[in-house]
Image (cartoon, rainbow over all chains, first blue to last red; front, top):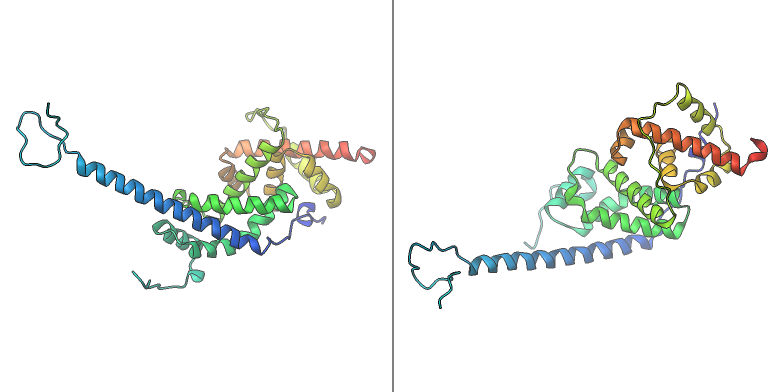
Length: 72
Length: 195
């Protein structure tokens, strides 16, 4: 039976050694960026929720907590 | 936590276990295990698609980075190797299509395949001389080359190809037939004296 010519031309090359270091450096850089973004996003939402409170307009505000109400 | 208590060394974890751990917490060293397992395969696929060592190296780098960034999207419905295979083929295809002016004529996938046409073109293709197959593949469009390599070099089933290419099985069959026909046509163009 004739051998499949696609198997004969199959590449058996090995990737260069230094590629691993390049990929790992890039992966670490991506991790750093992702962590930085997570930190920023987490802090942003935390601070946003810390500063904003839903206030019922029918009841007077109590205490000195943060509020979205504006005073003239 | 300063010291992580590990039950199994990373090298002994299955691909899917490693991915689960990576989805829980990013870890470059753990990803390195997956890199070591698949780098040769990915590189060889890129070589098969591009026949260019420098480009294959760059594509392999980008594919692993893309895989790392998109690991959270891996839903464990398929094997990790199939998913990575899909990322590899699609990334290479995108790259090659951008590079060469890819003919965008859509195939009529509903066209019925004539009886015996599949077998005939397959027998003809597999009887080509291997030293002449390379120039034929190089002259084909990236999409046709990818289909033929998947089918006859990686010996994927139609179902696996459909999953990787996000197509129906009948569409894969039709594209395979068209790719074979174009390869045979290219062979005749390049080596017409023997046709």
